[in-house]
Image (cartoon, rainbow, N blue to C red; front, side):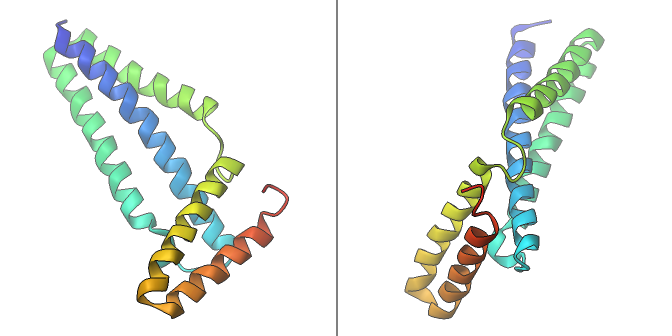
Length: 141
């Protein structure tokens, strides 16, 4: 086991936290869009899923690299990834928590401001989505 292995363990832990965060964030947006019967276009799920997929594939590549380097090092890398995902899942705010709902609302407000300059009709649609979300989640907010 060399110093590069320790660096890979750290990278795996950071990416595992990022993957869980992005998964919770994208899942919150997906559920919110279903709850208000909105389309997926305004919620950018596709890009989040691509980022999450490539991050996970990077982790798989790094774990495979460690297994090729040394079997013990590979199991340690796999354990780091799995344990950090489990701990992050337990510690991080759950899907549709206040934290993620407010993040999605802030994103939609920014998107509305951007669309006001370009397309008033899209800005009105986004404003309607924001109002529906506030109405649906008024107990949480």
